[in-house]
Length: 157
Image (cartoon, rainbow, N blue to C red; front, side, top):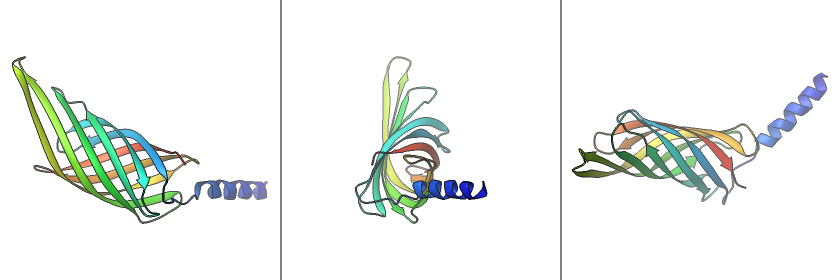
């Protein structure tokens, strides 16, 4: 019985231990919270590995403010520090945020801000093609804010 358990555990570990490779493509969906704005949003994105360690990870968030509309577009680059079932990375990138509020039906006031992203995260695998993606970053626009994102990742290849 003990031997069967060890073989099953070893087989499971081999299934999780796939390495990321150049050309891999991943899709992501999840939630995002901005600590400065105190807004929650739904985040959707992708990731393409340019090399075995560097990827481009564009993503878009739609926020739900009490009044008006808000969204955020990020183009982040990740550098992977580890491979296997726990893939930790550092990231840097560019962001653009939009917001719009309608004042008493008179007209819209819109705003757009740009800034840099700097942070870290991980791709924590729990299946052959599925992983969690926690990320904490600092967005340096206006006064800046810390942002926490938790997503679910699907590996396309």
